[in-house]
Structures are given as structure tokens and as C-alpha cells.
View: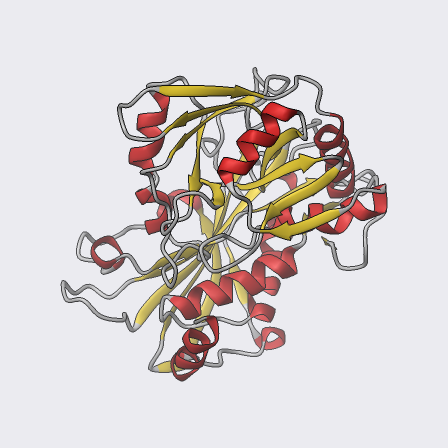
Length: 377
């Protein structure tokens, strides 16, 4: 299925300017962002945004500029607001131990951004253009990158359809943005407390052949009803199962899933309905250097519950760019909506996920050795 989608999408691909030739106009620099420690995630924006407006009929009409954050205007008739051609990424820029700044694994985010564009029949700006724009934006916004521990500058690349027409179809005009927000601890105030997660077998996040592996706005909008429902049970997140058997573990509403079974890190295999998370991949690549075995495979939720009860599964945790790694201490299981619940409790000690979090956080800030290319300066 993946091959078929990509084969179809190549007919819509355009080649835009050589990144070496791309000029980026810059506004007068505004004062750096100010913020309280650990602001609510996504609420304190960087003072600038990078923007490229372009038309698929003219690949030479491709001008980039960095402008004040609050100058963008959207017409109510913009097709993105009606038909949902919208993709995005989420990555972080960290202050390094030498005082410089670096984005973590920007190349993987660039590649995934292009894959999302292909899947939604949107034009690809190219990984090189993406990375050049990111580099210029990081340099311009460097003063706003926090120096405090557990803080970073969250970067949100975004591509949206801009045709002003109420008619379903691919847009011809698009806007690419890079904006940012100050990020502290995602679960500040409860960072040491494990998450409580609802699993309802009737809730479905993605279907085979759908958009489960794409970072598109519709995926997250579809999760809001389930998330709101979970809050009635004082749960922080929802863990989704597959759409066919309602037993194979997929992922949470915005994070990938891991369990620790007899000292081995196990995560659901990628099969088209799970986002290929950059944090997930980094854990899979870092864990063996710490002496841990890793495995990607289908996880039966029913079997996992039995293994939690028997003590074979000792830890479960969620991971993603925003939260990094956060342990799951309770699973609230519900067979049917509004039906009775059963709670499964995990051990309070989480030595493996805690060590992975410590190692990954150090790697992101240049304090732990990583392969060449992981830190984009």
C-alpha cells in the first residue's frame, strides 16, 4: 500500500529552488520571547515565523521571509479550513553544553514531512529547502532558545493549502511556515508521577490504508472525543488498539508506546497505522548502546495484561517529541463505552525508562555521545 501511494504521488511532485539559491528576507528582529518556568505547552510563541508562499503552477515563485509572528492573516475561504490539506512536524531546538543551539534529528523530521506531503497530494518543498529554512530560522530565533534545564524551543513546521475556493480538490497555492513555542516539562507538576491511561476497545485511531502514519491535523482532531471521554475517568491519555481485531496495540493519541518485558524494550511494529516517531526511533537506536535488547513486533493487548499481572511486563511508557519519555503507571481498561472498568497497575519503580529518559535528554543537549547528524546546528 505504501509503495502504491508513493508511486501515485510522484506525479504531483515539483522541484523548487536550489536551497543554495534561496534567499530569505528578514524583518527587523523583535525582542526575544519571555516566559515563566515550565509554561503550558504551546502557549508562549517565538516572536517570529518563517513563511514561504508558492504556487504549484510556477516553481520559480518561491520566496521566503521571516516576519513577526502576529502578522499572518487567513481568509475564511482558505481551502485548508474546509478540506483539511494540512501537515506539520514537531521538533525541538536545545541549548547545548557549549552555549550553542541544535535541533535534534532534523533530517528525520524533514524526510517525514515530505512523506506526509506525498500522502496528502501536497507539493514537496524538498528536504534541503526544509533544512535550510530551519537553519536560518534557528539562527534568527536563537536568543529565544531557553537555557534552563528541561526547557527547549519547540519548532512547528507547517504546510497548508491556501486556495480561496469552496470546492474539494487539491489546492494550487500553499504556505509553508516554521513557527516556535517555548517548551518546559510537558507534565510539569507531575513529572515524577506516572500517567494514567484509558484503553477502550471501541475507540479507533486509524484504519489500514488510512492516515495513521501521517502527521496531519485530521488525525489529532479525530482523537479529541476519546481524549475528552478519558478525562471523565481521570486519565491523561488514550491508548488505541487496532481497528480490525481491537486487540493489537497501536499508539496513544499523540505518542508512541513501549513496554519492558523481562528487561527487553518492545514497541509496536510499523504497519501503516502508527506514526514513525523520531523519539521512538532514537530509543530503539540508543537502547542497545546501554545494553538493552529491543524489538518491534505486534503486541497483543490481552496478552500484555496477563503479563502485567504475572510480573513479566514491568514497565510501560509513552514517548514523543513533546513529552520525550513518560512512564505509564495505570491502565484503565473498558470493553465497551460507559461499561465497567478494570485497572491494571504497573510497578512504581521504572529503572529502564528512567535511564532511557536521562540518556536521551543528555543526548539532545550534547552531553551524551550520539552518531554524526543527530544534532543539527
